[in-house]
Image (cartoon, rainbow, N blue to C red; front, side, top):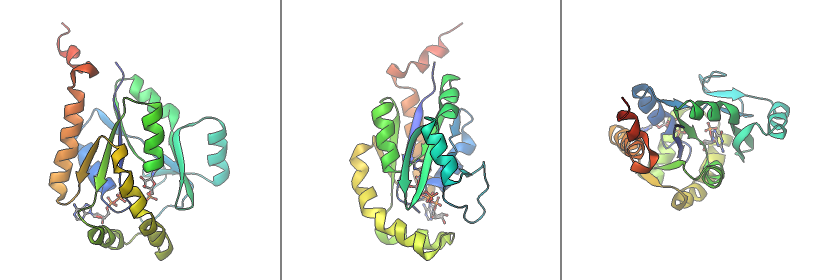
Length: 198
Ligand code: ADP
Ligand code: 5GP
């Protein structure tokens, strides 16, 4: 039986990476899909760990080759989910989680209607801006681009199945984990049948 496809979105700085790191550390049957991007690495980011850092030419060649499950242009750079890697893992029965923007989430929803879409919401705009600045990894220009996109991203929440406010980190992680658990035990997903097999 195929694994489940989860999508986590939310404005830059809301805490997606922080929550994914916590949740993934506890779940061996859930894997993170590393995206490809044409943006340069920032801070301590490592190629093949945080992203696959590609040139624009490499990205466009991959796109031409139908290599992305979804893709989008965000803040002046291309981002995409490597298709074959995700499909292979799902077919092996692993659950996969993507960190994609609202355009990517919309593509996943129309192409993979069984996917589960989770939106991470900030406790306030002020706190979101504070986190973005405090992270201290982006230059002023990329911070401004991210700030300009906040309203549009927050307005897309109705596309999603779940919304989790990331106020207290432990509480937000607990809620994301509850969603993952609840979706796995839905009768129509069929995972319960595994426990009946001799
Ligand atoms: P994203 O991946 O959504 O861009 P990050 O995970 O990089 O966001 O988080 C942005 C900043 O906010 C980081 O410095 C992180 O430590 C901090 N942060 C994340 N969650 C919380 C929280 N619940 N309370 C306070 N700070 C947080
Ligand atoms: P950042 O540059 O801050 O790492 O990410 C910027 C935005 O790109 C975030 O909203 C993040 O969710 C989104 N993103 C990261 N990887 C992908 C991807 O593969 N596809 C899409 N559509 N968005 C992505």
